[in-house]
Length: 171
Length: 265
Image (tube, rainbow over all chains, first blue to last red; front, side, top):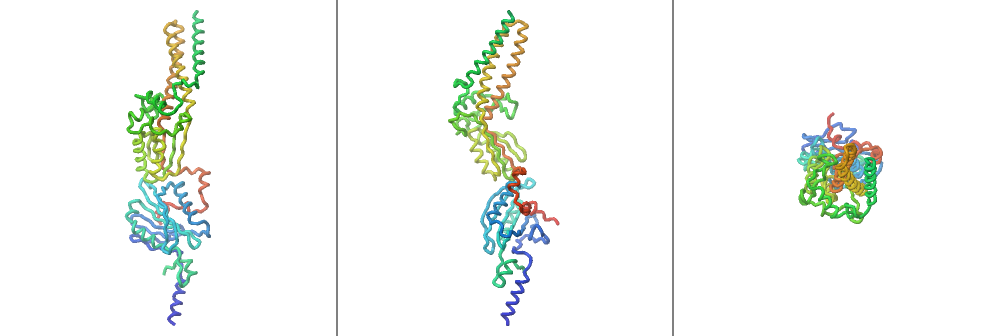
């Protein structure tokens, strides 16, 4: 009896899953902003104006990670004039391999940093962005790194692998 | 009698012009075709005491002094040369580099410092652009070091061969000087009427001579010092170029700090 209740509870939880197809914990020192659609699926802000944002693009399996990394790099460098400072392999909390592109750009004469993490999962491209002035980004680096490390783009559970793979349930 | 003298004068002028044209490509011209030390020595000898024509005056200004005398350790005459030693070509090197817009003020200061370190100098500087001139022998070195200062998004290097123009100018200058000397000699013994004509011609020849000498000095300066323009701005998004990079995904065009940091409702 207890087991059936437990299964029912997990099943309902799986069905109740809604919202984002990813998960991220808001970094310490940041607050999550609501109603950021359609541009962002998630956005959080520090008092100094450092921002974390996540976009989700349905790709229907178009392009691989390398394609999107190069597309973003080309766009930012050639057309927007951003300096590519570094490109490093990263992984999400669920083990999905991704790429982080680190850019620099002057805004109003001040140096700013802009980090973009790209993950491909669930037929979607997850674009995790962080940006702010170089000084503020440095002061929030630990917090940002912690928040970025919490990103999940696959949410399989032993209870409802099919449903949960489409959405990271947040209950 | 006066008429005969006038005919003789013009015949002399024509003769000197033809004589000059004959040796336009002869090895005895004062501009050595071997482009190494001999040419550099020639430039150094003639540029002493001059000013930098491209910065401080019109074409008549002298080229900059040789680096060994006035510009510290970098020496254009002894440093490795970017052009081939076999062709003997006089090449004017220019480069345009676009760097990403990050830490622009620092980058510009570093480029300027680099120019001085390599024995060159600053030619122009504004908020997003700097033009430096470096000794020809340090051109490649300068390009390589600028590439380490930032993210180079575009690089364009040109080498213009000015050998023909240089040799031609030298010959024309030599001929013009000869004509000027003969005119001055004629002027000494000329009647008043002839003297007016000769002076008029002398003024024309002198003006032309100064113009050619100025051009020659400018060429020497351009050959001796390569020009590097460093611009901190996005690559020009001309339609053809932009189309090749604009993927049909609108979100790509929304990427950037301005979108991310705009959190106003």
